[in-house]
Image (cartoon, rainbow, N blue to C red; front, side, top):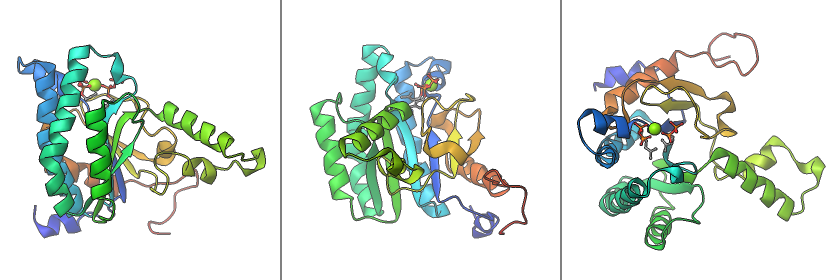
Length: 243
Ligand code: IPE
Ligand code: IPE
Ligand code: MG
């Protein structure tokens, strides 16, 4: 993409979050097993991460596995866990060299030990990188996240008067991360599926029928171009751009 195209983006979102959906349908439409779609969905992810850096996005959050996805057949879950492990092995060095800091949103309990160890090592290795913060929402659920936050607030002895939006935000997995400006969902589904339900209160949404494995750099650019035309009002009335 030429530099002039990038210049056309009036505003670039600081934080983009993506619900990477449609892997199963992508595969089934090609006569392949669903797990082939999950594997394909890791190939374009590298391109999307690189494009995020190129476009100047500072935080990218990707929904990789929800607390509800445990309800899927065992063989699909096993396939997914295997893909996550091999992806971390394959991509970590490259991500680290490109200044990507990995963070995890979700629970580590319930994840097998080998994968848990790899996740923790990846987080530690990349903790000082600043080019792009990549939050991986894995074994993540927005409601579960709020329950964890409430438990933490109570355990720390906060009084009712101390409970504010800021305090709750500090107890979420996303503490220290700005709210998502733009949430993208692929595959033509129009729902949030328990993703960033607190943080997404004022996010702009972008839906595309494209299945996740087919979503690449141009698609991300298109989403950013649409975002840059949005008027975010936060409950106020329309104002002149920039005011
Ligand atoms: C998203 O693709 C990946 C995960 C939920 C892990 P799906 O597996 O949900 O694909 P579809 O929606 O069934 O096509
Ligand atoms: C959301 O997709 C979860 C991820 C993309 C990881 P799902 O495919 O699980 O969502 P539903 O079931 O269609 O709402
Ligand atoms: Mg799905």
